[in-house]
Image 1 (spheres, rainbow, N blue to C red):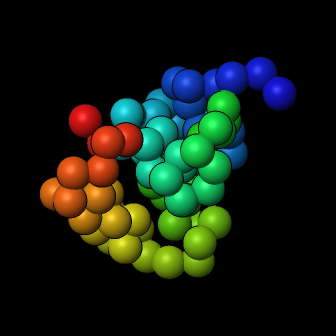
Image 2 (cartoon, rainbow, N blue to C red):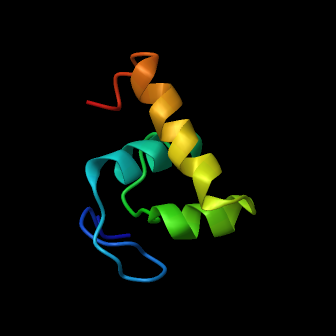
Length: 67
């Protein structure tokens, strides 16, 4: 599978680094394709705010994936 670091594999939305980091944290550390926040929320069947809170949590706790 070809690496796609700039857009969501499902909806095509442009990605930011936190979305890529969260995909690597929650789905696969070696991922080469990614989902945006909205598609991640749908994938995990949670509200978008849960995903945003998770990013904040990892960032505040010093996770090295979130710069």
